[in-house]
Image 1: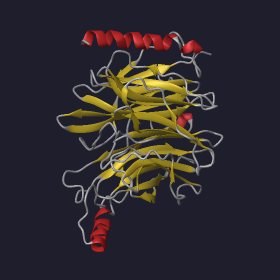
Image 2: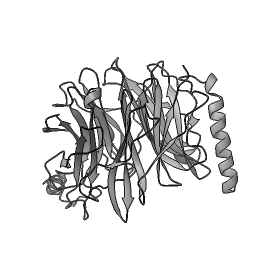
Image 3: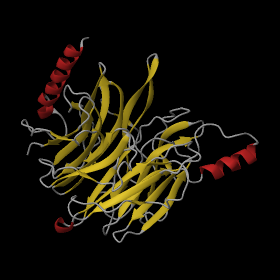
Image 4: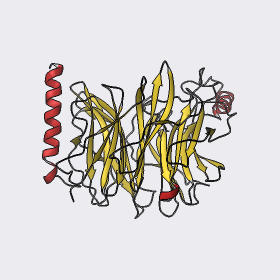
Length: 429
């Protein structure tokens, strides 16, 4: 099939998806959608977007790379994603960022309308072997609507050795911000203990832990280890509910090198976490990292929503699929439900809560060698509607999504033009 025919097919698929919205379950997209916005930095390739929303304030952050060096940029919308400000660089030291699609910068916006605070976290990876290098997770804040950002600081003690990153971020209570990340500060000690116990050298990736940190409004940092033995190179997820309970999800290494999704919660604001829970016994056996972590959300009733990708056996070959599950207590999860992906290798799901009490999930997949971004709604009764193509004929990947009022804002990385697309999706009233 030629590239021209493939692109024509993609346009028809997108039009068909919009045409059936009136009969689809979940929020109906308005027939006339506002044009999408493109965010970029002149002379640089833009990738790895994230979004945050509070009322009508939307903040987009992403990486802009030039000559092998990356910086983090932010743009702010005060009209629910219709227009955005000029991009501003977040990191004060030029090139002080290491970003990839599974390790994007993360952002939250908090505070009252007249005192919005924007907090951004990102990773800086240093060269060298994993066991000897000294990666850091940095953060910066803006208190003037994204016009200026504070000098970068590290979430943790900057003298720690080891690989770290794959951070996630969520707003908490009283202006606090909660971060979760993967951390290898104890890798060398654990490798030495393993060798002393077994008499054999360590094989494979250095062991990693998953950490939680609180960034307080006055600049204090408090951190707690959540679990050990996690899968390296998959993004984490964190959420905080209206009571201040903190929830974390990540990909864990279970016995037999099974790379399944784990979950833990803290009822004391992140000071201590309950033992981890396995969301689903997918039993994805892999001696490596899938580079595809979970998405997490918690609604006002306390229901926990998780979406993730895993491997399933179908026909002659295993293939990836995206699944969804819920929990009322954080101890047991519903049986997994498969999302309706049409392409191969669906993955990288992200999620937001829907205005009707359900959830809206976006992910990327490949159809006829074209990467595309799709969306599906999950009803309050957990019924999953049909998938809807958002990116048209453009090659696109790694979408993110937030809700503003009853409407949605979705961003993704354009693989064709190396810019960030942002689309506001109005739901029919």
